[in-house]
Length: 218
Length: 226
Image (cartoon, rainbow over all chains, first blue to last red):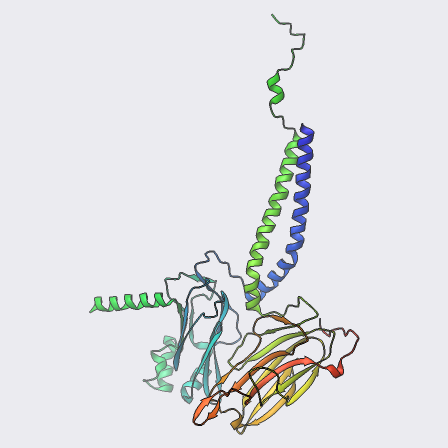
C-alpha cells in the first residue's frame, strides 16, 4: 500500500517538475521581452481594471510631456488641452486600452506651436505673438510645472476628473512678465497649458458641482 | 490474566490507520512544491501575456516573427509632421524605396519621382516635408541619410487639408508579393471654389517599398543588421 502511495507521489513530483521546467522555458522569452519593454516605457501596475492609469515618460525638453496611459475598455474618456492660444478636446475613439498622451511645444522663427496627441487623435495650435513667444522660449525651464503623476504612476476613478498637467508662470516671475509683456499679458492669469482627463459624465458632474458651489456662495 | 511474554495478535483497527513515514512526507512536500511552482509560473506567464500587447503598442518595437515577410512599425509621432518607421526586409530579395508626389490615388502605386535601392535587413525611414519660402521640399531619410528628394512648387500643396497619413502604425507583417506601403496622403484641391480631396489621382505624397525584380538574386542575402 505505502509503496503504491510513494510511487504515485514520486510520479506526481516528476510530472510537476517537468511541467514547471516546460512552463519556465516557455516563459523565458516572454519575460525577457517584457523586461526590455518595461525598461523602455516604465511600469504601470494595474490594480483595478476599472480605473484610468497614467505613468509619466521621460522627455528631452522642458515643454515636452508624455504619459503612458491605460484606459478601461469601452470607457469614453475626453482629453482636454487648453493652451494660451486655443483649446482642443479628443476622445479615446480608437478603443485602445494603452496609448501615449503627449503635449509638446516648439519654437520657430514664426512663433510657438503646440502639439497635443492622445491616442489616434492629434491637434496643433500656434501663436505668432513675437514678444510672448520669445519670453516663453527664454524661460521655458523656469515655468512652474504641476504634473499629477510626475513621481509615480497615478490612477483615476472613472467618476472623477483629473488635472494631469498645468504649466504656468510662477509667482516670482510675474514681475518679469509685467516688465517684459505688460500688465495685460495673459501669462499673468492663464496657464501656458492645462491638460484634463475625465469621462463626459465626470465633466458634467464637476460642472454641476461648480455651479452649485457658485450658487451657494452668492 | 494474560501473559505479557506472549505477543498479542495485532488488532485489525491498527491496519486500517494511515501510517506516514518521513519518505511519504518528503514526497508529499515535493509533489506540492513542484505543482505550486508550476502554478505560479503559469500565473505570471498569463499576466505577462496580457501586458505584452499594450507594452508593444507603447514601445513600437520592430519584432520579426516571420523572417520571410516584411515587418514595419511606425514610431510615435513627436509632432504632426513627424513620420518615422522601422522596417524589416526579408533576405530573399533586393528592394527599392519609391517616392511619388503627384497622381496619388486612393490605392495602388503611382509613378515614382525618385527611387533608391535598399538592402535586406532592418532599417529606419523618415519622411520629411517642409515648406520653404518658394517651394516644398520632400525628403526621405534612410538610416540617417537623405536618399530621396523632391522639390515641388508652393501650389502643389495649398494647405487646405488632406486625407491619409501613415499606412502603418502598430507592428505589421506582410507578404513581399505586395508592396509595403508606408505613407499615402492626398491634398485637397480647388474644385470650382470648393476645397475637396479629388476622387481620382491628385497631388500628395506616397512612399512605399517594393521588391527590385531586376536586382533579385537566387541567393539568400544575409541581412546587414538582423
